[in-house]
Length: 573
Image (cartoon, rainbow, N blue to C red; front, side):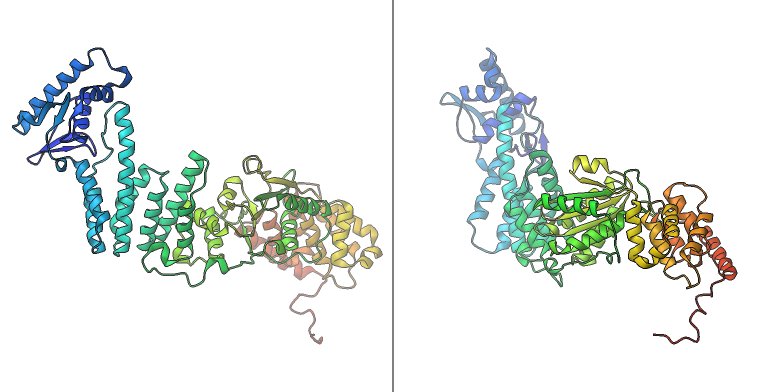
């Protein structure tokens, strides 16, 4: 006969489980089984069963439960004398090995004392862990059961970790993964369990799952205890990231190049002739100076969310100005939150790109988003990296891409104000408005030269007015004006724009009107479609084909020479 307490309290004999009875009777049996072969005083039994709420008839009730147990033993073990009265108490007169708790402890002790082959130690611990059937003393009420349950669970966790280490040392890390996974799910705040599972998963080639385990454990610790993982867990995490064999104790495939040595430089080219925006640049500089070593998120958005206002140009230009302050690299992604010509870039895709840029081989990039976020933030921890997130749809698209520790800076551009990012992540909003007339004049002067603007001031004012302070519109017009044939003046371009822009309209509508002007329509692949895409109004394929047809007609009717004929017979430099 066996008494089992590492799960529901029960008797096991002749290959079958025997029910013990009501909860209080099971508590009495468990108390006696824990002290198998030794007397337990009646006062102790009463106190442990009922505590301070013990009724006046507690002793009489205890005697009744003992009597029921004696009848049970007589029926099951054919021995009513297994439960006897001795020294002012009761004794369950069985060997300790007949109680699963004592057998568990004996196996663990033997494993710790064994100096032989590693496999023998692992086998002993596996047998010990296998005795557990679930929550110990399951379903039993009272303070003693709760207190004892907690202590035994700690013993179980220690044994499972020791077993996992023994299996790792003997080259069989996969054996313990199942038990570890179950316990980590049951006790998500116990870091040694998570650490052992991470080592075993990594050693069996399941590195993505190991990173997901770290991410989930860290999330539980932060959300429930407001604390970060301890030194051991963080050290194992770093070892796995660096593919250090010490992290798994088993030789594993290593990254061909350590991520820490990779300094990505993904920023788009700086904007040539970037003009104006002195106030916004100064504001960004101030925010960066105030941030110091703390994480900072800078949100660049327009007050009313207009397209073409120059958010991307400002962000990219400023990122180039401060890139030297982020020697560990610069990451950039166009999230296409408002690209009507295609789907927005979702966080898993953006993270895959970032992880690749940080040196993680594609086969090691986890498929799970939480695991990707954990790996990404781990790689950025302790490094100074600038992250530029362009054209964000909303805060939910941005949050998984935010670093988790100090030292990094994130610049986000969006037509939305991203209020929740400001409120929750303490992002700093920088509003980008339409350009003033003076700033617009500086932009045109930078592209066309101050002398040309001075020669036709009225036309310049007309062009600035038609572009309505939109940097994208001004840049398109400036690009076209720079290619006008000498006999064409800025006045001709201004008149043509006046015909094209018939009403103020919304920014995207104004850009469409501007790019529909015959002079600007002549290179739709470089201007019209690009401008509409930047403004969030990219034409659908059928509309784009129509734009191409009209552009060809415009070229045929234009007084300018086609591009493929221009310059024939002239010497090329």
